[in-house]
Every structure is written in C-alpha cells, then in structure tokens.
Length: 394
Image 1 (tube, rainbow, N blue to C red):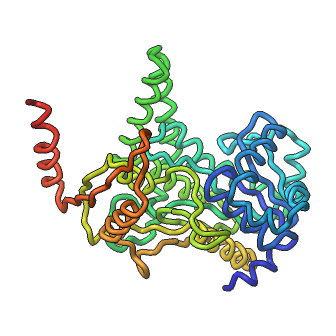
Image 2 (cartoon, helix red, strand yellow):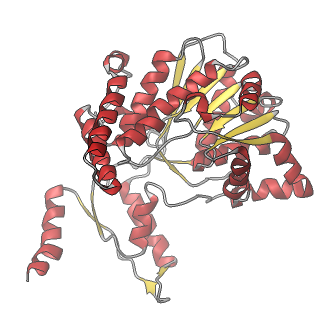
Image 3 (tube, rainbow, N blue to C red):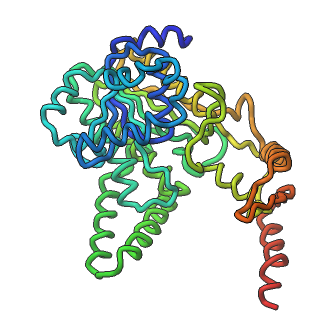
C-alpha cells in the first residue's frame, strides 16, 4: 500500500497518541502534520500536573525541536496556527485508570471524537524498577486499551512493542499464544506490590528500594525466559492486549533497534543517546576499546522514519478493514534483506571517527583505534585479566 492512499485517509481523522514526548512519537506527529495538515486533531497525552503544563511541554519538548524545522519553514507565519488548531496536549498518565484525565469534560470530548489510538508510551530502560515497568509497559497498555473501548468512534488500536518480546529463544520463533495465555500477569503485579511493601516496611533508603526493585525485575524476567525487565514487561503488555481487546481491531508493531532518520523529514535526526548509540559514543571518546561478539552477527537497526512509515500505512490498511477484530502483528527490521553486521559497524565507526575525531574537554582530538572484537567470552575475559586485572594487582 503506497503512502499516497494514507495521505488521503488521514484527512479529518482524530488520533490519540500516548508517549508524545518520546523519540518515535515525535517523528510520527511531525509526519502526520506534514503529509496531511487537514487531519482533524491530534490529542497528545503528556505527563504533567495540568493541561497548561502539558501545553508548555508540547512546545518545549516537541514543537520547538529541530525535527519540525521543515514543517515550520513550509508554513511560515501560519505554523503556530497549525499547531494550535490541530494539536492538543492533555495532561495524563497511562499508569492510571482513564489515563489520569481528571478533566471530565475533556475526557468526554475525547471519547466522543477519537477514531484511532496510537500507544507509543513505554519505559525502555532494560533494568527499570519492576513496579514502574509493569505500570507503564504492561498495565499502562491495558489502561490505554480500556480507555479506547470507551471511545464511541474508535476503529483501531495501534500498539508499539519491540521485536525482542520473543525472549531468549533462537531460530524461527512462532507466535505461541497458548504459552502466553497460561501466564498469570496479574500475579506478577501482586508479587511486585508485595515485594515493594516488604521493602518499605524495612524502612530502608529510597535508593536501596529502587536497587532492590530493579534486581527483582531482572530476576522475574530471567525466571520466565526473558533477558531483561523491558522486554519482559512489553511482552506481558502484548498478552493483555490480545486477551482483553474484545472487538477492537488491534495492530501490534514490533521494531528492532530504532536509529536516526534516514530521509524524512531530513537525514540524521536523533534525540538523546539511545541503545546502540552509547556504544558508538564511548568508542569515539576512546573509552570502549574492545567488545565480545561475532563479527558476522547482524545488528538489526531500523531508521525511525521507516518505522513511522509502517505505522502510517498499517493504520490506513487496518482501519479500512475495521469489520475484522483479529490482531495483526508486524515486525519492522532490516536483517533479512539489508543486514548491518557487527564487522560493518566496526569498520564504519572507525572510518567516521578517523575523519571526525571526538574533541575532549581539553580541546584535544581523541584517537580511536579499531575496535577489538573477541569471538568468545573466554578470550574477552583473558584479555581483561592481562590488560587490567594483573596490572592492578601489581
């Protein structure tokens, strides 16, 4: 399905977008406003104490970003009017019932108008506190679903997940709905609440409670077959959506590692240091000199604008088929057709930092040598012992 059809489709549509201040959601908002300024309204759910604060966050953390410069230039003096007429920031939190929308009039207005829900809100910290990760990634998604069921005109629920909800299995992995349905997600919530209550009763410092809840999340994830708290709680969020969606059409999109924009609205836009970016930054600074891994392994990286293109087309396709209530799952990645191998990343990063060296705080250029990659963990540990452990002992 070509994007041309999607452009026409979004005319007059009303969309609720959660996680609006996040990286992916911003690119989605910009895309919709750029390709179809005649969209009826975009409701952006923003964590804030009130709607005035939410509006301030809209301008400070979304609209004022460089991402919107092309849209701003195209509209010139009418840009502010476009945002004012088409975008409405609302104070809320997916961790609460009814998304924490305390303004009953606004809540009723939204439930009468919203036709499409795009749930992007997530905590992407791999070792987040278990209670917080459950509140956002698991039961947050559940709260958005329940809010969507109360919307009179809603025809589609689109949920952003992650390709890594598969856990630690290898090879071709089929959707195992039976295994998913057997898992007691509400028991996980009870266990997290019980663990937190026990820690609080011990009157230990907040920092220690946070550390313990992070450890508890990792323990529960690994016990159930997932490598970290993030993908575990995202997987449980999917399970709840599939189990309780009722007649509401559900589309789940599972991107791999999301990177900067490829082409739209312009190349190279990114915000913050994300996932794979921390490896590159530390390598450029000269702090990362070696890495355990297989040089032939594919690092599945997908540009954020490609993920957004999938979102846009999926909404148009499945909204048009709203009479079907089954869920549809899309994996969005590059490794099957255009893989980026670890060897490619090593060579490209070395070439880049040779041409554009990092400048340290003293104004000196940092010389980044070629990254050493160890094919086995034993070789890595041996290198660390010779390079660091033994000299420290002397």
